Length: 496
Image (cartoon, rainbow, N blue to C red; front, side):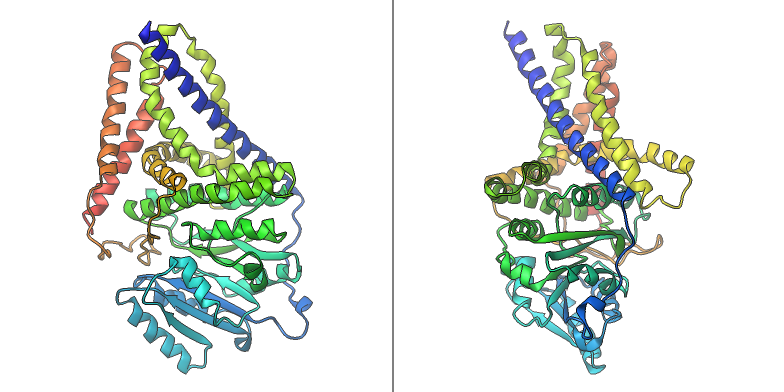
């Protein structure tokens, strides 16, 4: 009797997790349909700045920096090449560095100052507010009507401002966000899988939300803000790790619009080692949860349409999917061995495969429209067939790490803004084995990831031995996912 009760509880929780994931997949499907409509109605991009009159608006480019010795010189070199009247352009190097990046920045800024470039170096000895604080403090001396922001690993094209500013001629638009492109997308399996995932956000999600008139997101970099919008929305706040999402929502709830331009690509460097990727994922997932906690009450109290509230809630809660993915994975093993106790026909659960098919369609379209756009359909299908299962495995393998971040965010536990190391990786022959900023140690989370790989290996072995193979492929993917995350984490620690 007790075993039967346990079986009902386990299988019930497992089923609820599947239902939640299916709902998430349906939201993605809805955005895909909106994206398709947006593509069909797409008109030519704006490039005419005549709406500003005879004098172009003043623009400040803010470059928030923290210990970026490997990429900061190329960043500054790139920014001074921006095709915009020099007398209307100001560049701020907002450096919070604690290492020799300070001197690198000072020397580079001094060179361009001597050449007459309007560039200033601002160093803060205390990282109060982290990136949000640096951007906020930089505004004190910013002269621009519009504020362009770029992280240290970005290399925008020189016509970036001419491609984005025309959309700000509309006084209702407070932000223009561009699509991230990938300098090193083909560097390794890790970068390929990141590009595979990010392409979904920067096509289906952003363009789909724009087409559906839902709330969008400034992605923290590669975008331009109207200074008036920042001030009206309350300015940069540092109470979450994703200050960009926070200000985006506060601005839109004030009535400002975000314009997303998928056609304007801003190249950037992807993390090339697992620990850097994990720190980035932790910040994004925890920040997303912090913003859900902070902003959801405001969203539901606001006067925006109900459909916008639903999509905003799904957006703000999106990092929570990892909690459910992790729970589903852990519960799948006892479900496999307990389901017979309650005589439940597991064939019914194949209906949930529709969610996976939906997500597969989303990922295929997103990558076909970006990274694979020049390839024929046969090659695209071949790439997708290889990449999608690997992506699912590695995403499930990250679920413990990301779940911890999400739980900390919902609990209100504060932590420092951890940078994502970049190493000027642009070609296949470049290497990141040139020294990191800190000595790495194997964390308790990493050890558990290794143990989880063994947990799912045991499920595979016992399932085959007992003839219970309904979860065989799923458990093999989980074993590979957690095992790969453990392997790469430990391997890349050896280079620290």
